Length: 190
Image (tube, rainbow, N blue to C red; front, side, top):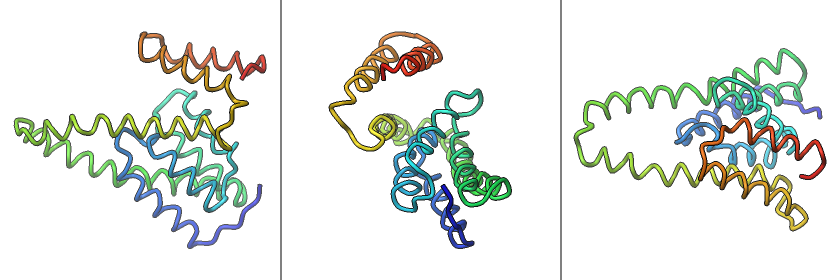
């Protein structure tokens, strides 16, 4: 895939990631549905398989969860012209997603620690839990449906349900579940 990006496109990408940074309650992965909407559906800078593969590769790799942002920027840059633009894409998305949320997190954590005795602070922390769960479910939905939900994908839905139950009810390490999913894919079962 080859795309042409102007300076205003790079600025738009940076601005989008700046705004997503402040919405990433629960981690950057919770904003993946909007990234998909923006990068794949609206701008068409990435294909759906590129988007899904970027997240899957970054999540399987050791290191922080936020690495998928760098990989998405890298792929946008590769589609726009090669290694120099891939590095630019990676820098634009990572700086965009990290600076606002890091600054806000530092200031809010400092204030929250100083005021942890207040009832409103405790209520706020408890109120964020369902929001984070809903954002993670939305991310899972985007990754599971890809090009749209279909009854022909029942094996994938079954694996998703089974994985959800195993994660919820056991302390099985996620790498075992990733390995099981890889084997199911290798044998063409999902």
